[in-house]
Length: 108
Length: 137
Image (cartoon, rainbow over all chains, first blue to last red; front, side):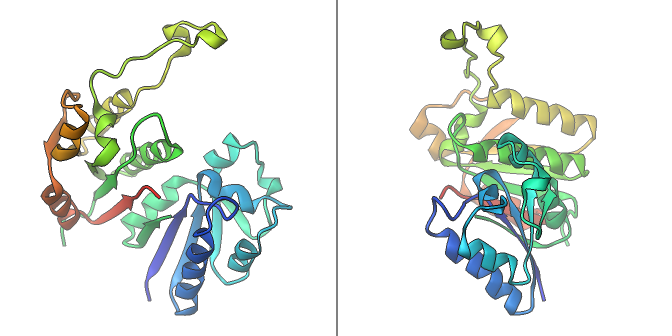
């Protein structure tokens, strides 16, 4: 079993490939790996309450843990209380922690 | 096992164009904050991040001169990270892809940033505890 952290800068509303990126995260989780997705930049957009993205909501329901970079949220005036329940507030430092822990960190 | 506290970053975005550049610099800062040494291999447009002749400018639309605008320059961010690493007695190395530099004519880089090629990325990645590649979509 491996640990994966995806730094997800792309969002499903402007990038068609985002659905495949989410799917890969889920497939790795289904294969028994630990998978976390850190949303950054416009990648935080689907995490907002009321944002309608079936592929993102499927990611949340698939056992993958998801956090959103607080800096990216602040830039977009999104408060923690505006996020979907499964999404926590994180930081890019979490990606560095993962690198230092030997995780496979992948930029999307 | 190689040096446990060295992280390598490969980056290809130019300055002043993408939010990725800001995120990239935040990652470098976070690595230093956590006591990790940093090695950067900059290629394609990212070789201009260290260009020494970047100049701040004012903003006539908002009626601000250069000092008031305080325009951020990536060469200054690199310098700040170099100083932070030195203060923490950590390594901070930066190599620009020489071919990419020549294509863009950005040979004049700030001190502490060198010139190399893809074998340096291989060396950096081989020696590092972990590597992150930030590709342009």
